[in-house]
Image 1 (cartoon, rainbow, N blue to C red):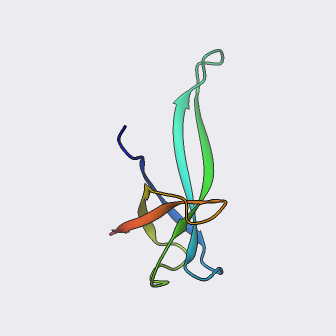
Image 2: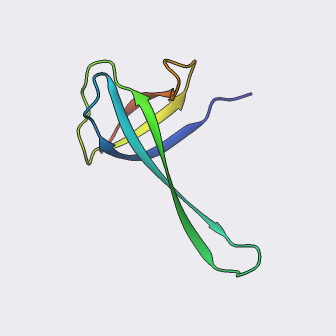
Image 3: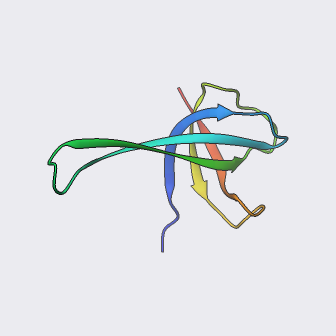
Length: 78
C-alpha cells in the first residue's frame, strides 16, 4: 500500500524536532450537496528544526516516531 503524502501549513513549531501541520481538504456533503472544508492537524518529525510557522510543507507517512507522530517532513513548498 502506498504511503500518504499530504500538503499543509505549519501551525506550531514549539516542540523540539516536531512541527504541527494543518491539512485542509474539501468534499461534497452527501445530503446538503455543498462543498465542506475540513481541517485536521498532524504532528510531523522535523529533524533539523528547519520549518517555522506559516511555511507550506508536504509530509509523508512513516513508521511511528512517538505516540502521535506518524509523519515526516518531505520538503517545503514555495
